[in-house]
Image 1 (cartoon, one colour):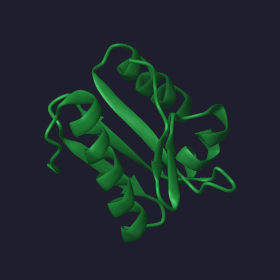
Image 2: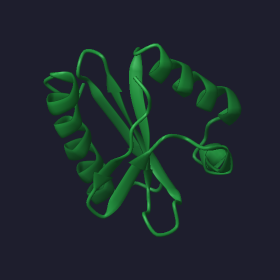
Image 3: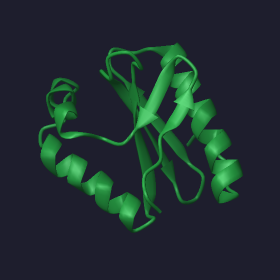
Amino acid sequence: MDPVEINAGRYRLRQLRAGDLPALAAAGLTAPSRYAARRAREWARNESYSWVIAEPATGVLLGEVVLGTDGTIEVWTSPADGFAERAAVDAVARFAARALGLAARRP
């Protein structure tokens, strides 16, 4: 499946971009380029699906949400933002149910 964008209300969920690498490093990832490449491979192989949680006007990375093929949803935001996290999880859960027939759940 090709990556798709999701409207999550106040946030946009989109694929990782090269411009996101500094924000990934600031969030604590030690090899952001490899991380982004891995996420792209996972989409291409239908192993998992990931989205950047982005501020819609600027596109600034606020976090990431990942949907596993078993319906598991994992999410992080930096700094911690419970509202962005809930909005992203809710939007991905709807996508999982409607597009993939998966019952989404948090681990």
